[in-house]
Length: 226
Image (tube, rainbow, N blue to C red; front, side, top):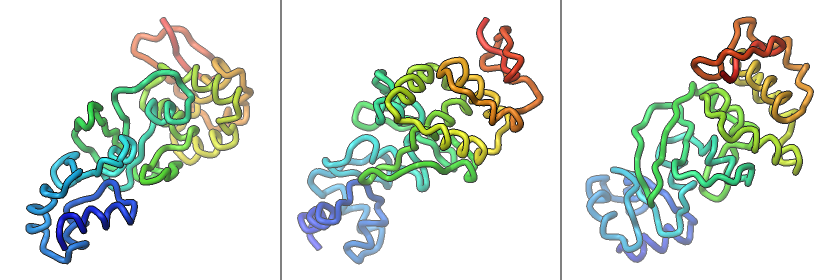
């Protein structure tokens, strides 16, 4: 199979991000040969060694296909759903394993490792895998990325883009009591939502949102602000 035929195969099968091993299967050759020929295919760029993408790939597709079973989340996902007006220059990817940061198309792609049991709640959009809005919010809370959550809650609830039931269900599936404390606190403080249903699941150990926080919310056991 010649390089124009390979490109046509990729286009006709809507493949925008692929590994060297995928090319080896397509052309029926050894991976060493595929590694040599892939760099000669017009319109193909390398994300990192062994991972390539076509001109048709967007940054969400590229970012979520570098590591298997990963997905774009946090601020990047909130922006995808228009839950924030901020434009991220770092694309956050939740992954079941550690991976170094890479730079692609002017973006830095950052990988955040979570336990495999906490890799859930994402959807497929084209060739991209993106956290559902509710999971993106929980990933932010769990990892301590709070900066844009008030905006996300306000936009999300006002426009029906966030499901309270999904937030509750996903938070319980996360199996992190401290996450429950944070979620209940943020829901009531910044979104004006009654989260009493979560009280019986929260941690009895106080949670500190940031180092040095000394204001205390007794109901949710959360130290916040200075």
